[in-house]
Image (cartoon, rainbow, N blue to C red):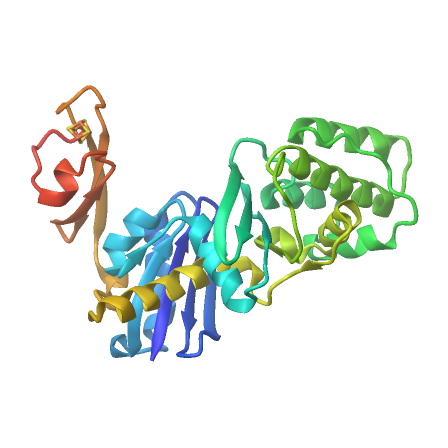
Length: 324
Ligand code: SF4
């Protein structure tokens, strides 16, 4: 039997299958490309040929697209990314106190004490240091992103790069290239700048204590790991499935939820890969909040809605045909 976790983010959609012992038996990483429904369906198409619906004991969703995904798949649990990442890390090591997470387009820090999240922060505004920014710099330097970290480690003397924001970092890198510095020294300088940027922005004022986990796609970059270790003076641990930790957390939360409530899963099956989903939205005029309510239709039938702060629509599933 398996537990399914779906993490729909703005850059990637990650799907994992865990066995009864919470080991990852399958993982899928897809680009969301602004189409979260299509991304989940693509993932399910792949899984459909490998697993039977009956083998799925529970399913959980997380990420910025967790609400849409929950209606698509029939989720048993829907949780925010902070909780999902914390749960996944604690499942590996109960001693973890700090989680540094840097994904494709955002970054976060999670502070834990005795297995409970006590503080966190997210940065979705500045692109400096995120995966998409590093991808662009690798492309510009004509160095494969997989080799980026290795280059940084080869450097004997990092070049100081201004990392306050993505625009500064990029123009400063170009300037340093023009001055003739070696690529490995520039890359090491860039890793250091991005770590400084992260610690001065996302992690500002946070009580960073060991044990420290580093996860999200950028954790693949050993140059960033080394720069964090140098700056923080602590060893940094990278979990084995560092880039799908949110999805792992969602699967664990779904398992725990069903075990607690003794219910059967709502999982709709891998066949949703062939359904036709449409999402539409309307502005509710019920009060000055004027919520943008999103409703999801599967093969023409309304299967759920979200965005209503008071629960007026999601609870009743009554819709006035005022779709905008
Ligand atoms: S959904 Fe509820 S909170 Fe939002 S505008 Fe309508 S009545 Fe107000």
